[in-house]
Image 1: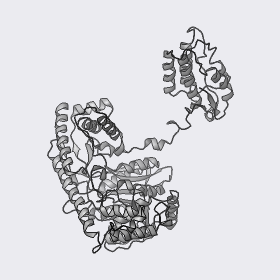
Image 2: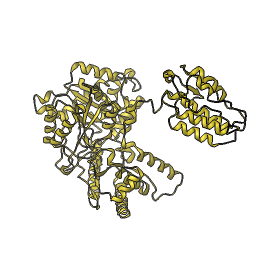
Image 3: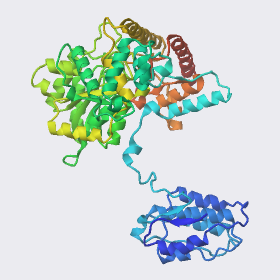
Image 4: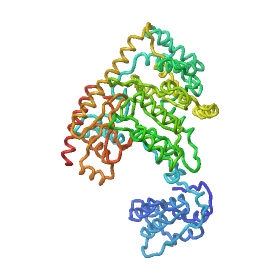
Amino acid sequence: MELVPVTTGRCHSSVRPLLSVLAPSPLRRNRRCRASKIACEGVGQGSRCVGGRRARRIIGRVGSGTAHSSRRAAMLGLRRCLQGGVRGGGGVAAAERGLLLGGPSRNRRAVERKTTCWSSSVSAMSTMASGDCKCLTLDNMNPCIKTMEYAVRGPLVIRATEIERELQQGVKKPFTEVIKANIGDCHAMGQVPITFIRQVLALVAYPPLLESPQFPEDAKERARTILAGCRGSSVGSYTDSPGIEVIRQHVARYIERRDGGIPCDWNNITLCAGASDGIKAVMKLLVKEEGGKKPGVMIPIPQYPLYSATIAEFDMHQVGYYLNESNAWALDIPELQRAYEESKKCCNPKAIVIINPGNPTGQVLSRQNIEDVIKFAYKEKLFIFADEVYQDNVYAEGSKFYSFKKVLTELGKPYSEMELASFMSCSKGYMGECGLRGGYSEVINLDPDVRAMLLKSISAMLCPTVLGQATMDCVVNPPQPGEPSYEKFQQEKKAVLDSLALRAKMVADTFNSIDGIQSNPVQGAMYAFPKITIPEKAVAKAKELGQAPDAFYAFQLLENTGICIVPGSGFGQIPGTYHFRTTILPMPEKLKFMLEKFKEFHLNFVKQYS
């Protein structure tokens, strides 16, 4: 193995002779010794560097009888030492022991045992051996990325994917398939795409189809309009960074219809690659320490993990406020005030996030509740983030979706002048086009200079996916009465939403029929978030395994039934309570089967640990 120095530092010239001594030889390659293990253990303990002239004496003499594995282990230890900087010598000692134990004579004093590194400039030097040396390691990478977590795609999902592969390889399990109820991926669970949306996408992706009589004229008209807004009449070209202008205009008209005629300026609309990108684009504007304190963002607990992950990534402070489970997961103003006041000790609260309809909790906020939240945000001077991607998913009788923009505007001044960012997506609703990554944000009452900065920031990403923009156009500019696609579009949309309403009730009713599980009604969105009672013995077993009790429960469910859910600890919950999130998306027959298996598992689990 050839060692190639890539940078220089004070230790470099002194270590070079040592590295040449450690070059591997073809002698006795099949020999193994425990020196290799010792040296590697030293590396794993965070070994550091050798420096100065004393490095020359780390090896008194390495004869031809030295085991190849010893030499290699010592070299690996020293290489890691060289990478590590100036903070110790554990790896040095390990490498020394590897050479000593693997040499021709164990009694020979072949190393100097207490070599230390005195060079502060050694951190600028590293050594590359056949590409093994890394400039970026867990020790020096961005700590915010290490902190962030996204429970929806966490260890349970990784294990679920492994189990799927095992089943494909013929490994016997007490089930025949994995049911991924962990994520709101509609089409993956069997939902059929809306015909009109896919027709328009086919036409914009392959314009020669515009000549085909198999496509309705209204789909062709939408496709021509979209292509006319694309440079070169191709969805393969870049668009303006905020999105295609005509689609942004269609979004504005959609919002006006939704909100009963309240005006919407299309210049406030930004198209994005799913709502997630839009949320992050606006939230990063808040990242600035003031008075030595980080900016704080108030988020609901339980919450959608995008928010905790984004806050961690941007090195902001998470301010959790608990939703009231006993009151259908409502937002209680005294709880908002408590969270706000406590957070001021360690951060500067600057924004509040509301998810309506709720994820993972499935609640739909009343108009009065929205008004109370707006007034609270005004009093505390908070920027409002309204996550409204499930606005089409309202099922419960008596529930109705009200946009924050509508309520805020109708409250009049001063509330109508508040900063508000609201978000919509084509991934949810009746569309379920998760993989196409389409969405929009509407940001109102933003300072003009700040808006210029937002647009500048967005421009660095060039533009959102154009097929995603086209999908969003189909959502906000659907077939109208009298157009050839109208009847079929309405039938398909109603069928999806009616089926989701049926499944929402089925899920809540089934969980409430099981001892030890309690679920609020699923008023909207695509999830239930039931509370579970976990026996003390199971809690103790989870602690023994280093797992949260609800994560232990979820892993046991997966291994025994193939059902993949997300433990409540991934979303946040009141300490001492346990929950899980499941989607309502499996098709009715599969959902019925899943709930039967769930009930059987839960009863056996409780019996086993009682």
